Length: 211
Image 1: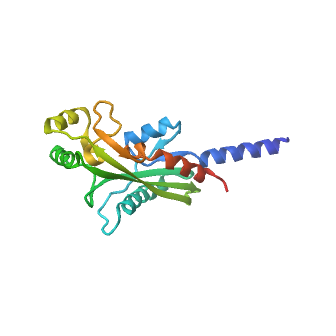
Image 2: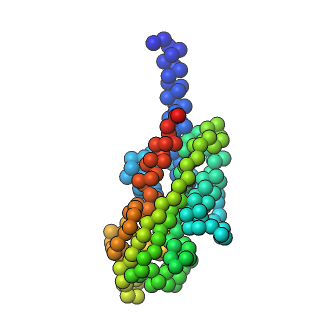
Image 3: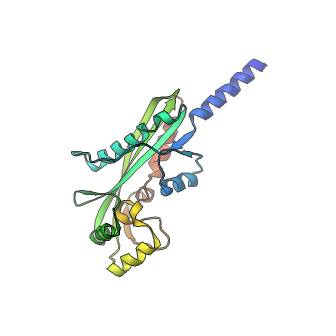
């Protein structure tokens, strides 16, 4: 192999490596933890996106719309690579439940959810960027059924001393080892933590496929 061919091969490798560099458009510690457990190297970028009420959308459409909004707001920050963004909500009695605004609201949420089935929806958007433009997108959602254990108010008080409910949709954390409040799950466990890793792995592989 001549010098020109070797240099060409190195350039191609660098270009592919750059294009496959991953950016997580989220500050969620749970999503960062899941990516690290998957041995995926990534850089965090903060999306400039403000979630707003979008009427007339189903829960699945809503989380996908927010995930797309977060990814789209981050496109100008990189020139080559893959942007990953996600949005998670709790859906109960035909009502969307996001992050509580204060502790009082967090108590109300857990008191209403205990011993009753609800659903957790997560929307995920993956954008492949080349020369500053989006060349490919994959957008999907996952839904998981969750049943919480019955809890008294003192139980909830003790639970809130162990986790911060204000940064979690539904005011609880499925991955908390300190206090297990989940009774049953129907579907993806990681989805309830805010990132459906099973579908994500397939989507990332499809996005990286050069074909």
